[in-house]
Image (cartoon, rainbow, N blue to C red; front, side):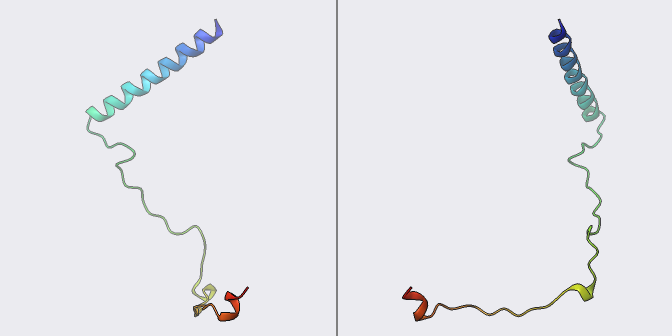
Length: 68
């Protein structure tokens, strides 16, 4: 008996959401996926003085490394 109540409740919720979604589409409202989300700044507080600039050199294999 309890399983039937759970199944009917889930079916009712599914039907309710489907009808709600269809009515939103028919009304011409935008769906959540179509609406652009506002861009927020980074959640990290990075200052210019915290950034370190570095130069990188390419490491080339020498003949000694090939003999290993």
